Length: 157
Image (cartoon, rainbow, N blue to C red):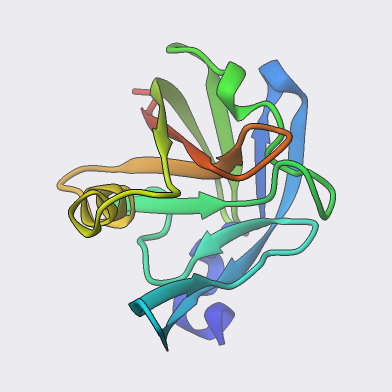
């Protein structure tokens, strides 16, 4: 279904050479569920691959392309994201082109035991942007999942 929606623009591979990441990309989504504490968002697992969030934009289309993956299970595709620094390169390939991005900043933030208001703030990482951007997310630390790492990268001009 994602291949029909995005065609040749669907990302197929993501590479982050400085930390040795070279991963297949699969299309992923999300859904909501009601729980005793209210509605919660459940993200679909990309398994051993990097996930491209199909409700985001494709890389190079002028908005926010969101990727996420595991850091300590299922191949640990995004282990080491917390070690990235401003200036590091991220490369995304689809069927027609290779797009190069440069890391602008790396954010580390609490995900567990936070207020509803802070959860809404954290969801901004998934929001559309007014310019081309990659957002890459994973859990942290390696021994748990209490925080998230978000890498923000912009196209290399």
